[in-house]
Image (cartoon, rainbow, N blue to C red; front, side):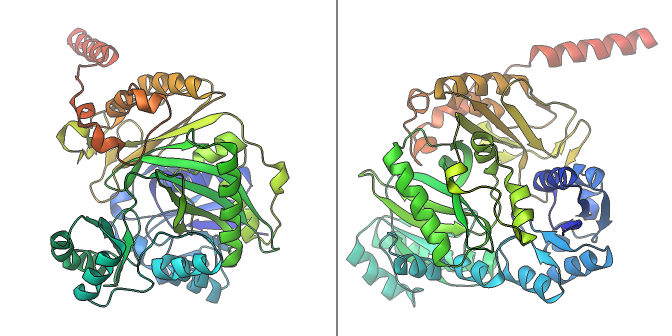
Length: 472
């Protein structure tokens, strides 16, 4: 049985995994760079080890991380998300060094991380894919010919891409000529491979993904879907489970199709099958993420299943805790990514010291974060500093609870996306549960909200001033 896990990550996801380890009576081991020496995951882990002065490189050194896992007596490693979480090398090294990797095996990670190979696998399984190239594009001339065949607009995508990077929309041959080298360059710099493929652009789709769990005994189940349509520049902002835009027939087909996709590639552990839904209600496979997702919290909220604990059980060789018939969804859940960004200034990152922090509470409210009063958000990492997850029995109740929770939370000292989300909750089509990936672009006015100093912050400042004055 697994008794000690090294968490090859940082921040919010590391704290999440540490909490799961504590509930399973498993010793947690954190890692950190010099920039993260005061991070919350370092304080909460049972053990924590410095991995060097470079703020990013330490989290990307697979050999060093596995060596540390062995030296600290770990028998398993959890990659979290981001960094090395979808790098097959880490899984291969773990296997070679007799460390259990909490995720799928290296070959599946490699196959599904290659978007062209993933498309091919889904086609073989009879799952609809977006029309596009069957292989990497050889050159610009081939790209222009294929675009003429499938019709504009098209999307150029990095074959090994992820996280919304290495993607460009082209509405004309001129756009394609301008963007082709750019995407090649982005792919090479971000993913180490100058490989690009093409897909037909599904205009204003809804982005729907399905959470799957698969064990080593041949059992595969789905935990329903999440709606990730509210996004900016291919980066998700708000995720909802289940989607308020699907009927039960669509939901059933989607779940069954995701399970079939996972089985077709011999998948194990937790994964996410992502789809696009077009205006004619046709679903297309987009990609499969071979790791824990940021938005797993909304699935946990509607099903009551701890996905991280299930990941650990699967890596331990145990069968799934539940059969498909046991999985019931209850109510609706929404996750709002609290990013340290200034929406009024084109979402410019806002790193710095958090002078005051209040987490929201009450029924159906969950906060996952790695911040605290006095914490300095370093400029080296992703801008997400917390996740607010809200659950309610009905969609209208969820909207009201989300607004209340956003009003409760307080993050001072840096700009955040909290007021921007409060504006989104007021928009009619969002409240009606009818939106697509064009929502953010359609509503530029939402960044023009009025700002005023909150009463409680002003009160705190007055109290501090009085205290200082009386102290003299």
